[in-house]
Amino acid sequence: HRKLLLFFDRAPWHTSENVGRFLLRNQKSIRFEFLPEKSPELSPIEIEWRKRIGNRYYKDKDEMRNYLQTRIQSDDCPVIKLFDYLLP
Image 1 (tube, rainbow, N blue to C red):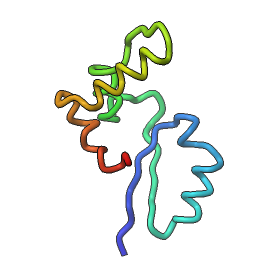
Image 2: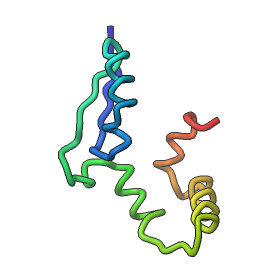
Image 3: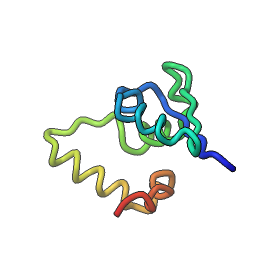
Image 4: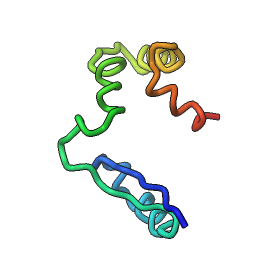
């Protein structure tokens, strides 16, 4: 049977105990690999994040939230649009 292959960077939320337990429970159907440390060029979402969303100053959380919602919903953010099926 086929496995889902996931690639993770080493962000704390990818290396947490909860994620580790989940991966262990699902090891028959999920295989995972870590990207090399400090290699954002290997992660397409990192490149798109920086180009389209990141590296901005926000005066508060509301401004950041509004900006991100607008960007993610816009037609000029195709990589993030690929993940629409994950959102309710």
